[in-house]
Image (cartoon, rainbow, N blue to C red; front, top):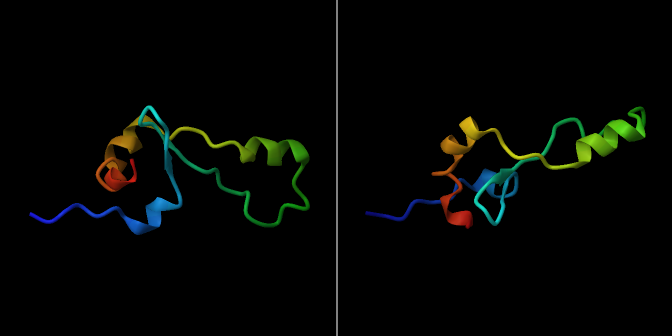
Length: 66
């Protein structure tokens, strides 16, 4: 049976922490930042953990990133 391949587009979009949790990026931080407040940009800068229900679905696609 062949190896499971990592979904290539997910490699750069998500990071796996040391404990196996998945970190994601927030939307609205790529462009058109001049009219957004500094507070809004700071809040968008952090990388929250992905919701537990979504993590289960992502485990197979991110299996080779560990």
